[in-house]
Length: 277
Image (cartoon, rainbow, N blue to C red; front, side, top):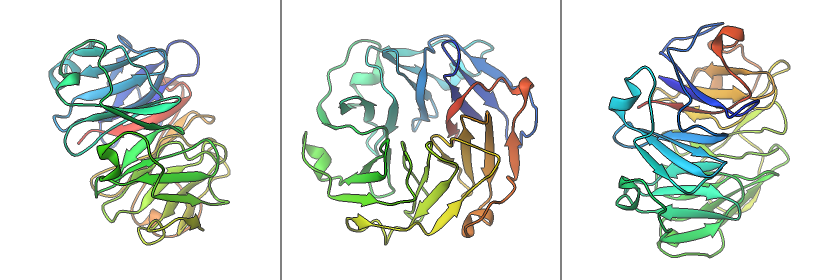
């Protein structure tokens, strides 16, 4: 299932659509309990859904709870954020200005006010590459990497900083199986790819692939499915589009393979998308 975070008018919601959904389709579920200005969502290794609310709480919905008609949070943490991601050990990293905070798997097993075990400087949101390195997006023209070794302690400077004229607010980086970075430019209309080789050292780069649109505006936090397809929410045009691996192989303005859009969808300024494992 695909879940989109919406934070336009009102407190927002998470809308859930079954595989293959396209057009003006109604969601099979709408999650509102525990949702208040959602900034990011992701699944953990147990396929539980986690949502970062910018208003001040991170909430978890267990798989069992997600099967109910009106899910309620299984865990609620008093620590809000605009972004979140899990590392390979199951620790949760939450981006909330001015830091990215790490919480251990044990700390997030129950509701409460956990204390971060370490922090990094925050730019926007975070994602992990296949090698366990953490990448931060930004509200401007950079993405930055902290290696797995650097994450063992608080603070420090990024090992790699990539700048590009093709980056316009790449808030949350996402990675494919090859280690290439994909990001939606919420300050424009494009989704861009940088190869693993381009990411190996700091510098100014031109993306390998630029997916552009004259119709869809303001791509937010993109996500990649297991088959290599990419889902992009477009906050300003109010839709969520899927592009296949074949469409992502070269730059252009392809027509999405699937496009969830229209009044029945319930989408309201969709900012983030997560694909259930």
